[in-house]
Structures are given as structure tokens and as C-alpha cells.
Image (cartoon, rainbow, N blue to C red):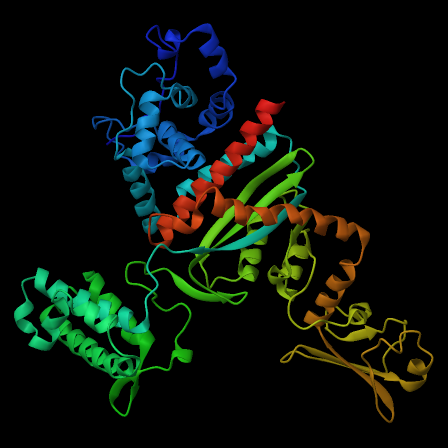
Length: 527
């Protein structure tokens, strides 16, 4: 299929809108379809997606990219299925008007068009690491911010846990399912003759229910040990029977991963690890290899974590950046990614977050890029604000002056530990106005101060948070905290009918686009 840019967007004599009454046409021209058409559909960069198609002009032309991407956004705006999208485009004149297809003799998408396009984007991401959908949604968001004259100066950020649609499995069910899937692969390959009766039992109907759901609690431990032995055995048979195709076998790869994560070698035997020793990024369900485990705020989560960055001012709000990762990805890592992406020339002056995003490293990184990282509260041990008043030599790392302006008797910096140590005269400390607050510890001959660069950065940050300027910025962060609820209630983000990180990224991006487009439509129709 060859890439062709969509040029058939002009109204013709056969345009279906010509059949509308004057009253119907007036309603159509006042509907959501017009701002969507003008400010979203026309801005979609079809050329971005040309890499998904052949460059052979003799091939059959592709379905118009802007129609597909526009339909995918409308799908999320309206909460439609793919089938309902086809129906909407066939019979809803407002959808046709939004996508400039009112003059088409036959509407250009079928029941497989949208899913095939998502699959193409998914394969391209897996091959190149480039997320074309995300790039396009961010470009549309940048256009929206410019159209609404939203300044890039202030951004606010929040994250949300997103559940995978895969089933939550017990440890026994997980191990049993992986072994059963491996057995079934042998059966499909007509190689079941290599398996003994014990392993063949896994493929029998009803065996899983008996093993996973009907055992008494005191039988589970011994059954787990049996399943581990069977897993080791079938792995060995795999390696003997299919030595040249192991890398191509998904079931073998999952079997090896499970044994690596769930077991250890002890006295020459493979045994189960204690539950506390299993990593949170271990396999949760073989149907979703990317889903991870995390406990947050006392709740267990299995799946992913989303991050949203909203640019805001008095003219409006638009989500200008976002990401989706396994839920073991920390807020601090998201902060690092966002600051790096913004760089020094983004026009961003302040990025306001909650405390989980803030560390000495992210504060320093933000400062290096000319961005104030503003948080209402710092997580972790609280740092005495007075520490931020000590002056440090940027070249040597040594303490050169205390908050009261006194010079140390001696000072040194340990590069290995990152600790700066300084000795001050006792007479200086006796009459110091900061004596009650200071971290200096009096000894026989001097007062000793030991601080790290990280403590200084955190102390300065804590002091900033009390400033009225920063309190105003912190208060503006409250608006972004409604996005997780919105994504759950209106866009059903916890029940996306797909599995796997790359697919989830694509669906999440389209939900973000739906939020932005709704906001733009509201802004345009109210003005």
C-alpha cells in the first residue's frame, strides 16, 4: 500500500451537506464539527506517517491518514468502539463534516481500518522506538497552545496508576498457566510425543480449575513445588527438541523468564524464591508481559503509570506532554524525562509538581535548564532550612561561610561520600543569632558542621516553598489533579481493551488528544 496525501477534501456538487435544510445546516455549522475540522483535522501531519507505507506509486493508495487519525480522536471523545466509529462516519453528518468526507461517494474507512493503522504504528514503534502517534498528538497540542495564546511559562504535572486489563493471578495460577502454555505449544507443533503423561495432564480440560481454584490452602505450597519441577523439565525438553528456534518461541521465553524471576538454585535444585525476594517488575500475567506490580498509597496496582504535563495560564489549559511506562517507573524519573525534553529554550519558567517528583537531582537539573521546580511538599526526610544558608565553593565543594557570615577555621570536602565538613570557632557560635536553629555540633575546641550538596539543595527548595510567589505557583497545580479522575471516569483508562505497553501507549495518547480537542472545541464555541 502506497502513501498518498489526502487531497480530496473539497466540496463537490454531490456533497451530502447540500441535502440539508437551512435549519439543519445552521445547526451543523454551530456544532463541534467545525472547530474540530478547522483546528484539528486540518493540522494533522499526514507526512509523518508516510514511513508506514510503501514508496511504490504503483501500489494501492492508503486510506487518508488525516481521516484515520481524526476518527481515532473522535472515537475517544465519544467513547466509541471501532465498529461504532464506522457507523458514525457512515450516518453522522457531523462526523463527516469534521473529517471532510461529506463529498465522498463511499466513506473511506472499514471495520478494520483503525485497528490496522494502530498495528502499523505499534510495529514501527517496536522497530524504531519512535512513537508516531505521540509525536502527532504533541504537535497538535503545540498548535492548540499557540491558537489559544497559552504561554509556555508555567507547566504542572501529575501521574496516575493505570490498571492492565489482564487478570490478576495468584502465584500458583501464574506458574501453572505458563507451563500449560508451553505444553500446548508442543501439541500445536505435533511434538507431544516428547512429553510424559505428567506434563500432558496440563493440557487436559478442567485440570487448571482443579489445580488453581480447588486446592486446600495447605496443599498450595507442595503443588507450587511440583509445578516448578515440571517447568524445569519442560524447559530442558524445549532445548533438546527445538534448539534452533528458542529465540522465536514466546512460550519458551516466558518459561525462562518465570523461572529466572520466581526461582533460585539451592543445593543443586531449583526451588521457589520467598515472595519478598521477587522483583516488582516480574511477570504478572503471560497475556501482558509488560505489566508490573506496585503498591502505592496502600493499594496494589498491576499495570502501568501515566504521566501528564499541562501548560496553563488564564487563557486555558492544554496537555502538552505525556508518557506511559510500567508502574515501577518513578515520578522522579518522569521529572527527569520532562525536564530533559523541555531543555533550556522551551520558554518554561516553572514546573509545579507534588513532592514525589522532587529530589536534589531533579532540582539541580531544572535549575541548569532555567526552570524552577516547585513542589508543595518534599518527600523523604525533612531538611533543616538553615542548611541552605551555608555558602559552598562551587569548585572545591567546601563550606566557605556560615549563615551568620563567619568563616570556618578549617574546611574539607570528601568526594567519595559527598560530605562537606567545616570547623567554626566556638566564640563565633556563642553569639550567633542562628544558634538555636543551626546544625553545628559543639566540641571542645570548635563547632563542627557536616552537610551534603543534596541537603543544601533540598533546604533551599524548602525555603522557596514558604515564599508567596511560590505559594501562588503551588496553588495553580491543583487543576492538574483532576486529570486522573477525568481519564478514569470519562475515558475509561483503567479498562483499555488491549494488552502490552506499546499498545497502551497508543491508546493513552489518543485519550489525551480527546481531552485537548474537547477543551479546544469548548473554547472555540464559547468565544
